[in-house]
Image (cartoon, rainbow, N blue to C red):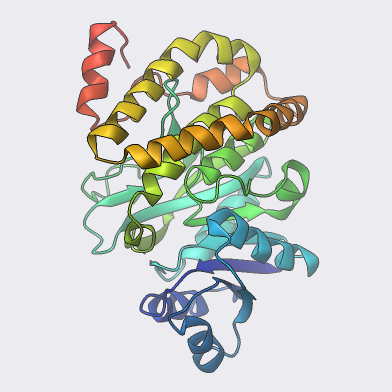
Length: 333
């Protein structure tokens, strides 16, 4: 069975050794592909010098998460990999991480995507056990911030979406529904791909035995306003492209309310420039988004009721202002 692991990296010299050492210890031994997004900290030379068995694909500029991993996925598909895993350069895999994901995928032919239990860097808290998508338009990691208790999220089960940080994808599914949407650049592109897979009839599964640790935000937090710009922009991209027609109309008032609150929150954070830039990009991208929407919806085979049943009705946990609005209008979950 041919398996590849794609690691996107940007100025990750301090992070890559622990990441790559953990992947080289996995069984079955995968082909490891590092896609360097125009780093200037010497990390590509480090990979070439210290990890000669790792494939290094140097890019002249930063293609973002979506563009970077697509380069690696194309490489893996060209040599006929059956499964392609993605792994963040600021993450470390526990022994058996890859084998557990592959066993789950092999046991469930309907699963196009299998994700695991991603923990905080010190292992005390949960980073993600799969991704949820709210009717209000908000994607969010299931369980983030909760204590890492073995009794929580202990069962393998279906989830709506998977984080791109430590997940395996079936090559057959990728060939059918397409790769990551590079217009996202970073954030929510993993939920977008999972949403498209769900629409096309594939399932997404969570495997608790596949454990990895993640230093969340170790790369993107270096750039002020980066997260907010892409989050606002991609909030609209995700809903516009993927929400099926009847659900698009039914949930539109919630989506618009949620988007207004996200915009207001961006201003409160002192990032009006990021908001203005995101709104401009949304306006310019709308013709392409509508074309993409027609293509994505034409691939849908899943019943509307199945998609609706998987949507999270409430606001993301921990969002105090959002929950106040939710209570005010009588929405419960």
